[in-house]
Length: 424
Image 1 (cartoon, rainbow, N blue to C red):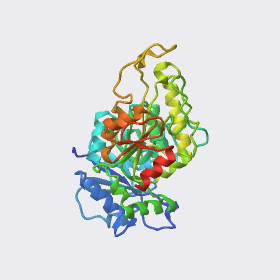
Image 2 (image 1 turned 90 degrees about the horizontal axis):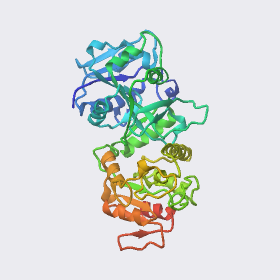
Image 3 (image 1 turned 90 degrees about the vertical axis):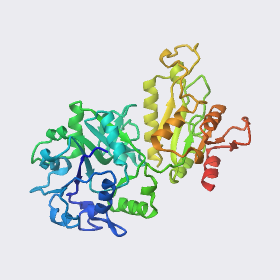
Image 4 (image 1 turned 45 degrees about the vertical axis):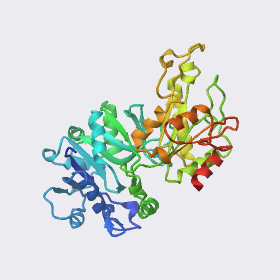
């Protein structure tokens, strides 16, 4: 991959972490390795050897834990300048045109070549490494459109009702060097609340890179316990994008909520019995989880595309409060047949994404590197069955009236289906 400089922000006060240790969080040990060792090893796999350490007042402590290297640069602050202010100290003449910025309290295993390729293809001024969360409202939330372009950020603490897709910042960014000129010298400023807000106001191109790869901060004792457990169980390496991971694909209407039929938009909040409880149980497994749903109500004119997107955002926000999230939602708004009053002709096409075609399953496979042969599709119709068969995914159908062949597994409801999968 093209070589870019890495900046690691590792000089905070770690006020909330002092119950665990007095040294900087980047020197936290996981088994016999420091986080710093783990980060450097990950970077070196992709040839990212030139590292700038923003150490606050901890330069001497942190530098002792690094091998003598001419490509390591250490910066100390006379006064602490915050996660954006510290970047103004960088010697821009020594920086590549694009810079990888890492917050120093993250455990991760990431393919940085894919991250950089995405950043370049999108011609982004700043690209945010992001993922969904089961504690959405304890996080800084990203509001992005279908192309990943970020339109707004909602920063914690959240004081009002927010309508946004479930996407949060992880603490990793690729930023064009020229953007650093937006940060005033020697002034304390926060990366999120100052720099990102400023870039949104100035209409800079900020893009979300949604990845399934493991990346979690351990800035509090509670989060540290979780991350330490993930390291011990090797879940953080299991989620490496190089590994093919099985997934559960779920239809929505008739599986998670009541299906109101072909002539009405089905209310996603009319949950079927035990469906939320079952989803939360599934979330604790090692499966990736995707929603694959036909939503022809858009083409038929029962609901606008904008209203559907808003409905999905409200849906994701609600489920997050219950402790659940989808790795991604895929939907088809099309319908091939004309003749509905008020229909939207823009969406009246014979597309590749409408089930029983497997287009959305293949899209998820390509984006998330999924092992389809070890995956399941939980649906309630022939469309779901044939889409899964074409994609060579095991079908589980929740419809006693649908009978096909011995390849199909039949269950009465989502609870039975998920219990069957988890007991295998």
